[in-house]
Image (cartoon, rainbow, N blue to C red; front, side, top):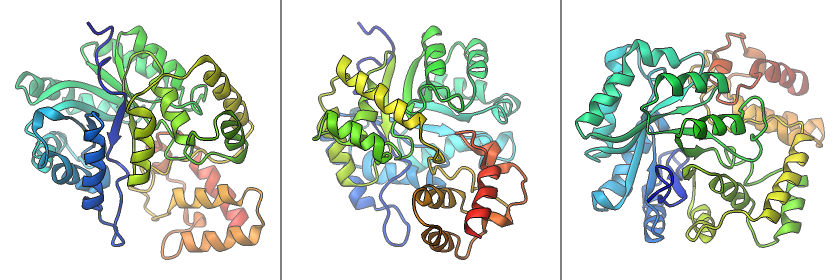
Length: 373
């Protein structure tokens, strides 16, 4: 008997947010098929997409690479309804569910989430009666388990789990870099979820790829501890070692990443006490780092009235640390070619409201103006 809901689920999930792309920007379906085959052949089953991922192309890719090629009972599929993005009223918000069914061809969803609840949007799900709508679909058998993904403060999580005690699970951003980060509060949110008896699917275990290629001081610590282990393996195993975890979602973008993840997650072993001590050293090194902790999710850019490539500017800024200003200016010019510049920001605040990391984006853009323009 399971100690918690989802305990027996394999601890690596395939996140379909950052799928491989062709030169024309479209999803590489053939490579995605190969990745799905490797994943399924390893005995792993959990796939995660969303209505808004890649403007709907992620859900369509799930159909072509997974649903059309494997028996429905051989895998589980999760998708999400985003009432605050891509919806303008209650009807269009609810329509997302039916559109997701059509795009994926899955027939039903094993897991279904209200997407990215934050302080500035969670009431939309109440206003549009989405909670009741999702429970109606569960009663019809079109959803097996439902919950919400969360990007806000512990106090709001406590409120939501009190008001919606019937959710089956929740999705949280958990990684060793954000465990004590007050802007994400991974530890506090995890503790609240477990206090309420809720199981967790983990998103951003490698923080948008940042922990797969961490800062040099972190790389040194990890390589000294285990020269053969990939940097990503430390991050994913860290999250998977926690209590109450259904699975850890990795947004794999190529076959190499899939093969690496499978090498240590096919037969997952939790971190040992010695490995946990290594992670604590890494956390100390990260606390001394001053780079911008952007995960390049691009939520900030979807509604930017000036078309500013915010994550790309931040990437240039982070690479500029320790380099000469000329290199930074050159890369900045490339990143902003044909798009808005940092100086074009009108400080409307849309980006900061949308940011799951709660970054001070306007302030960072102002610094980029000083450094690069």
